[in-house]
Length: 445
Image 1 (tube, rainbow, N blue to C red):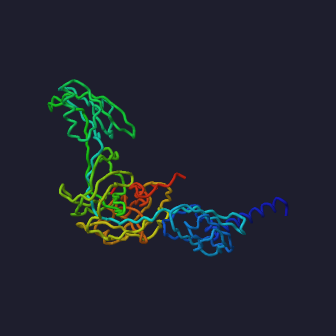
Image 2: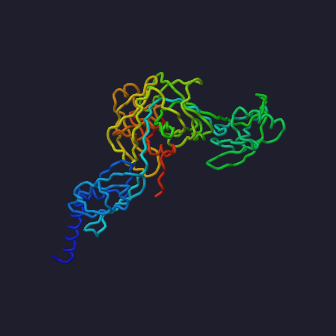
Image 3: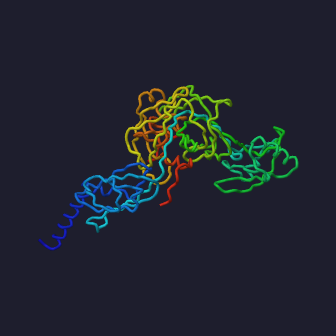
């Protein structure tokens, strides 16, 4: 056998053993062994390398995390058996594994955060939201002569989605005040100076009102709106902080799809009167009633990508439980059975079976954290799957709150997206944000 043939044979053998090793349990365990781990205080975790050797484990802060129940800084462990970790207080610790006490094998950074529990919701709520200014939702033409029409606002480069926060330097909080200011400016032949928020930037534009000969009044040629209302689902209530979270997705203006900047708002009791069932290509909806006299449950302080948040004094009636449940970090969520809490009739919260069929790896806040599928025949029979108004329904897995329903797949209403509860808790201000270290047609539900 020639030298080149020997080299090729040795290369093929090396490739074979590498491939064989990559399929082995120790190799797979080693590859999946985390470099970072997050735990709540009092939480336990189990890590496994499945290697038939012993190693030296060193823990720099055993008062924060105990390994295999030991309070020692350094000791031997058998890597063939699972390594257990138990957190005792908030802080950071580091666990190092070395073969023969010298060869570095693995280092795991453990971040322990204060224990956090919330009461899952599922209640249907009415949402009344007022924007922090007046939103431009369209342009229209003003008839200034029998044969001439213009839009002063459009000519002044005012765009759909612009938020008018001041007129002539004075804060604008009520859409009803605009007509008075427009009329006065028109009579005095003076332009209005509009302070506008656009794409997180503040700009000033001037617009001269025009007299509409058909309506006999001065107009800007703009359609404007300062409020929104609808129904959704309460996700959680944190009794220790007096804070709630709901919806699981941002509230946008129905015409411009622009996220609404919160000026003020409230959530109120709501009663589900009927349900339009979802069908392929046509998501259904909850029909619910609430009025001016409906009991106010809380205020609205934030409207973010992960829902609405604010203060709430107590959990609403008709809930499934008043017991606070632990929450799960994003990396704890697994594919498999789970449940959602939601209302399909009146105000009674019920539990329904679902399946988490896909979990996205998200180290930082992002929507579409998981794909869920309704498996409960009772819910399928009642709603056809996920319907609008169900967004915010809490998702429970293995006794922990893991997220909320957010969207329905238009072409498969039995399935949809959910977001991780961790991101909602961060936006609610009750969980600290960590330091920075397939497309399917859908509709918000």
